[in-house]
Amino acid sequence: MALKNQIVKQVVLSILGIIFLTLSGCREIPLSPGAGIGENWPLFRGDVSCSGYTKKQLPEKPALKWVFTSEETTLSSPVVYNSIVYWPDREGVVRGIDPDGNLSFQYDLAVTVESIPMIWDSVLYLGRNDGLVTALSIDRREKLWDFKTYGQVLASPNMIEMEEQKLLVIGSLDHVLYFIDSQTGKEVRRYDAHSFIKGTAALWNEYVLFGDADSRLHIVDYRTGVAEDSFLLEGAISSSPAIRGNYCYIGDNSGNIFKFHIEKGKIIRHMKLLNAMDKNTSFVSVPAISSELFIAYADPEHLYAVSRKDGSKPWKYRVKGRGGESAPVICGDKVLFCTRNGVITILDANKGKVLWEYETGEEILGSPAVIKDHFYILTTQGSLLCFGEEV
View 1 (cartoon, rainbow, N blue to C red):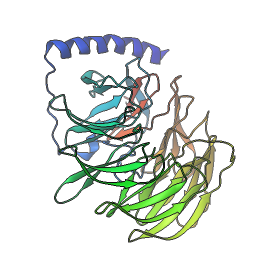
View 2: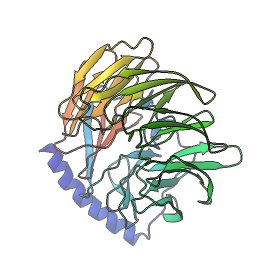
View 3: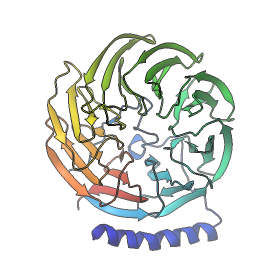
């Protein structure tokens, strides 16, 4: 009931916000490139290695601060830049919500979007279902460029910072991983994976790692666009790798989770850490990794913690509903995750003990975004929930 009341309130506020933006001639919001890390969760999984880990602490006693509802379906996840939360709905409308839950940015692409955006130096980048990759200036509220691929772009972008330029790296269902100049929108190089690419590419040293629909993990040198190594898993890969140190963790769509030791772009050794519990079940499992643990689903009903040191499993937690699509986030000594059924849970990362739960009553497929003292959850019905410390 509380969530419904919040939604009614936010519908009114969003209408007033749209009117304000129109009457004010789309007033610019000052956003500096050098925002503090506490205010940012600028891309999928929080960092370029897609680790799903942050040192930011979750509130001790989380409380719902506000709800903003767009009433438009979304399959995306929220990202945060300078304390503004952004996401696209499935109709292609990109919204930005300020720390008080008010609409502060809106741009209509007028095309289906299912990907998760990335924001870098006040520019929002995202893939589109019509095969384009788009760059939007947040400050100027205008499109900077479009880049054309030949398949749907469902993956989230990542950013490579080189001395001479910054390269956007993103995969498409046309089988190609593209390296795009972030300023001009021009192709710099490409790598043909010969299969659909749905997951976000993770960065490690001079390499990008990603999986494809033909079950293969690729390691590509981003300086040349040449593959250094690859490995065939046991099922299609729609998820993103998670990297920490010289180790990469990735799951296939059956629920198998693999660990790879990588040096100089080559796979030195590998091992399977989790076996699929039901090989007839297909779902996406994106791991989260800390210095001691990796946490992931091996089936849609259980979240597993596995020791990175010896492969032991300190705990297994049966989730309320179906898990998988919404990836967990490790926040210090806690883990935050959501289920399709709309249950948000915080566990003790070391013991698997429930510390807090909240039922939204709406389906959740997107992954959490975590900033200092707050975290954000986006439902598929277009409700953005902000949680902070209980007063």
